[in-house]
Image (cartoon, rainbow, N blue to C red):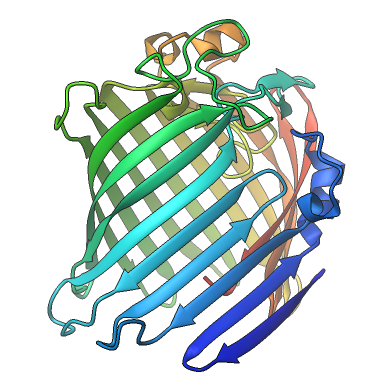
Length: 360
């Protein structure tokens, strides 16, 4: 449910997309994190501005603003023209505000939901992306960026302690600074009957100043899909770990729609390491409708006590969990509409709604 409008202003193109579906889903499933009664606060939407020649040298401008019920994200990207066989360069400026529920939220309803802890992460970053020319199966992307991460409450005021009086940042103040070098490599191969994907991400906090965070963060996602007649079986394995400096909100959270269904976001655990496996079996029911059976499981590998302030231990998160259930997938020209019914290990039931858009 929503509205979409495109406007051409000279060479620039402006896209407006207002989506009210998330308002309905949020009212049914997610407890409100703020007290705003403004109608504007209940709108989920996207504004996209594109210009093919912003400085007269064929530099492309992309400006994107995503607004959620409780979060927002603004990205400005300028891409320089280069031959296809050279690395493509982009200059990126980004600012986001996101409720920090996964680590500092309070589990409720037998871990099936997470209540607000009154903590929000405001993140400003700027840097350069380098995308290598793709080979037949591998693609690589490298970026270096400066990040200023500050912590605010629901009223927008800086804070440095959680509701139990433990520090939220690594520095002990209301903000952390870091320069991060990140490399991401992806392998993908597919045919009519199967596919395989492997994604590696390595982030290194550079020691440019003594007060800036120094760490090494690693994450991988491996997935395999096999067709069994008209049906499709997909299994994926996600693992991650971080060593060195870290703020509690940098912990890997487990639980939620994109992790272990049947639990609230981060309700299973949050640690320095994690391992999550997802399996889904989909069967076509009609031309556009699919049925799905799924099972998710994961663990923090006993690393919750290694997170500063021990937020997962204080909140009584188990550190491991399993969820299973079934769902429907409706494919349309607007994207794929998803409905999942999940049950967690405590027999608590949760319904999830989601939309996978066809457009970036």
